Length: 111
Image (cartoon, rainbow, N blue to C red):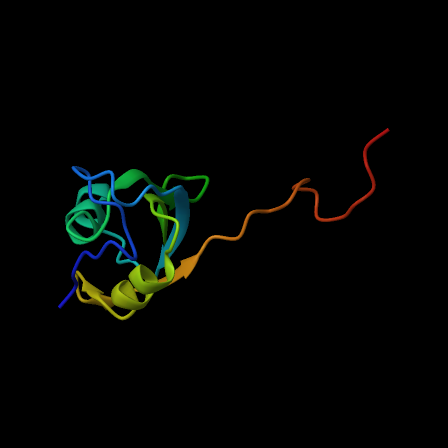
């Protein structure tokens, strides 16, 4: 069972645990998963700041979502959510790594 604890998330009505935001990625999502589905799964565990479902250029779901959470210790939450089932698919959850600068992948700058 998934539970909310001060160690992994700041409760909305408490100032005991002041947390930053952290972004996680949810993978292996079914094509029909909605933002609301993800919110219903995660909100009992942690406060969600935003959810973004990834789509291709044609607007079709890629099976990925980025979820910004109000927590500074995502490890326990990632462990709880990893392997959870949503719409018949087992979720893959990992911490989003910041790109650290240019999105050009190390190529030379344009002139």
